[in-house]
Length: 278
Ligand code: SAM
Image 1: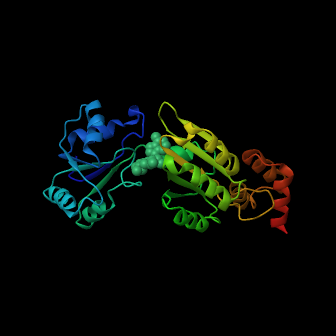
Image 2: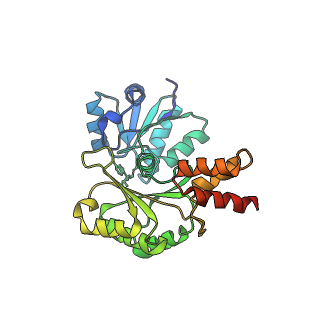
């Protein structure tokens, strides 16, 4: 192992999601920097990892940052972990990574679970392009402002949301994005009560408000991007496929293939292709 800062992903619920490489790195480094050392002790005990633990918070003061940095400067290796998932993804670590890299010390990712990717890939929303918005502001006015700024975003949007704000957040989303937009609620991923449900925003907002169980645990929301106000019935993926293949396939065959792949009516795709040819 080279002396470096290792960014090690840990499970978001199911302990079996820990990679062998993650265990091995955590066993071999000189020190593990953790957000909450008590919380991380449970995971480390489970894998019989006895490496020294040190607290690290983004706003834990320069003392914590300096002490980890000095350790790395001496040619030692440090692993950064967060309470769950991938460090730096809505979690601390950015300042440390920046400083370590600027000093010419290696930063090595040890990838693994992250709620954003787990939710997105099981969401049923377009995955070819997406944006990650992390947590929306807690205050209602600021949250609505942030949502307004995203109203025309064409990519799928991924949000983390706290359970006590989920109902208010869905009401605002339905209001600002429109009730027909599809949203996926991904709750308690990889855990016993894992729930992944996709519905139009208006229905989702009512369903969650009426069922207290859906307001518990850890939640990711994946919202369909805006289809740019076009009324030709095409979605972004179908549009991109047509653009890619329009010079290679005759319209009949192209519309058949794209319609099958994107589950759209063939006539609709055919009309769209003709409109482009014109
Ligand atoms: N670093 C983590 C990652 O890579 O996903 C995220 C940390 S952030 C402080 C915690 C938020 O992630 C939770 O409030 C929730 O929105 C989301 N999250 C974490 N674990 C989850 C899970 N098992 N199911 C659904 N969402 C989860």
